[in-house]
Amino acid sequence: AQSVTQPDIHITVSEGASLELRCNYSYGATPYLFWYVQSPGQGLQLLLKYFSGDTLVQGIKGFEAEFKRSQSSFNLRKPSVHWSDAAEYFCAVGGDAGGTSYGKLTFGQGTILTVHP
Amino acid sequence: NAGVTQTPKFRVLKTGQSMTLLCAQDMNHEYMYWYRQDPGMGLRLIHYSVGEGTTAKGEVPDGYNVSRLKKQNFLLGLESAAPSQTSVYFCASSENRGDEQYFGPGTRLTVT
Image (cartoon, rainbow over all chains, first blue to last red; front, side, top):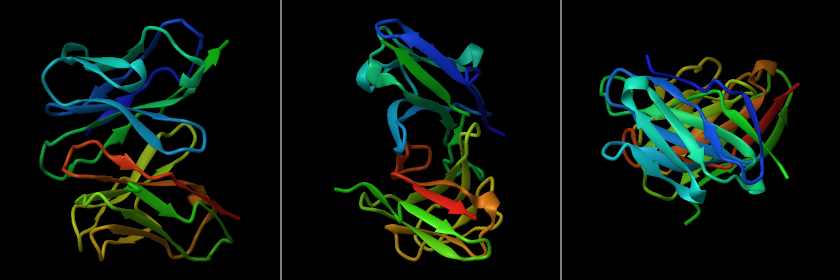
């Protein structure tokens, strides 16, 4: 069964500091990996995705993530956080493994990011 | 191009009442999904559809039914609402299996 763990429920950083949000996954084949962001009262917006190829992927809003197969990780990073980045971030795993997966995504529990001025 | 829309945005039900949530997408996507979001639990898949006329159960299907009579619409029904179904419901769609999913703005449902 596929699963995602986001070890940090809540992270607080100062504006301008660097950020890393952790994500570990379990998936029986080559995973498709996603990071979504959710602002309060809003739906989820895709930040970036990894399907194959270069293991360092760039996303919107200056975010990037690195796929590390040996560690089953897909951590999200940003070199300098802005106050507008305060939101909840979700890592998700899916794939095209066939069978009954039908492309469903499994989400982590989310990490709430607070940004201090 | 509105993407994925959901109606209604908010609803309050009494225990035992029924209702239907409507999801519509204008991207001609084959795959559609209903999730519920509860604090500290991320999003959990209720039901999904891999094309018009098809539906299948997700992780937490009990107490819900769905229908996909038209490709662009995916309906989620609660036949007899329970307080445990108080949640925020999100609809999503994707073009292909495993692709990124596009989410609607959500429906906040309270069952008293």
